Length: 457
Image (tube, rainbow, N blue to C red; front, side):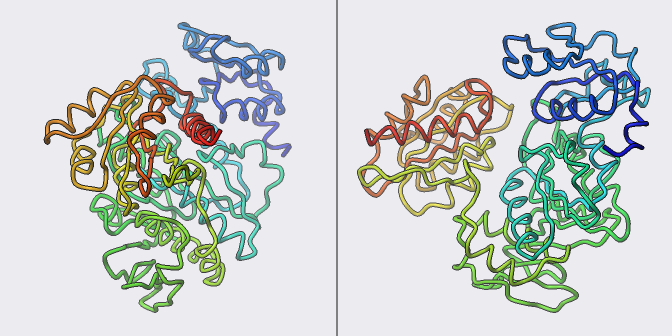
């Protein structure tokens, strides 16, 4: 470990709030510096399970349950996990005293390598993965992490200025961040996480941190087709690139007929034909354009971008083809935790769809989803979870529609199988988070995958 970092934290009292993946990695990092750590979470040790066992055996103090925020004024630094509401009085007080930090803010502070960050309401993981693959295929020492599931705080000693760090950044990670990456993308902005942020204004304000603190030599890639992100160009401190599926841009990447084009200072170069892109759906063509714009601005090559376009098959739980049974194809799109993401998935299919939707309520409107269900290729709707009544009400407000509500995913797959005919697709694209029945969307998607695979037995 860097001795300057060790000296900065040696003996400091640090409260770590929220014992998720990123903060457990941070605890390991801080423990190596000699900091005195108090790990805190509103969950019980039974709910934390293996995480509690790991942390308890490490010898740090653990404060769990309803009183997990008590006594924070005694600590030199309070590190909050992404998703811990910043409007909690104890968290606000720590912020007022200048004591608040996060795993991602510390990584930004100490990383010797340039950071390239990707955020947006949808498409973050696919775009982040595309950027990583293009840079890696271009011969750069690329590493990937952040919200994509790999906290890099414990990898600092392995990084050098020659590396390029590619981070997926959620609104929770960006909220309160006082540093911006060297290069950034905002894929789009739509309603999301209003159960935590409260308002769209707060949600957008969190996203803006990905470019607000950039320097003039830095750059941001914005979605020209999204009015909210297009307007952000006016306040971006660095150079602005755009990507667009509908309009020519002067700097960035856009679709020109069947060509996917990179353009800089008005000089255009075709990367690939749209038909060559391996990923399914127009939204993924837009994700590729965004990734190409950032990667090429960051030193990637056109040849690498073209190679990745032709070979990249996608990320698990994102329009992931699972299997075909009886002439029916099954797709896992568990990542679709908002109505907007499900709309993008529905537009990716020409075949008739049996849609499985519903889950945890993030306080989002289902009116756009209901309209799509009536007007796109959906022939039958299977609903489950806490939001099933709300989705049903929104759909039936527009007229009769064949749908059914079930109790769980096992029943949903069985119902979808009964409703499907050869040539149809069964699509799990819930339009909701998973927290009412699963720990996360990956667990939900893995369960769906297993249920589909079991159909062949």
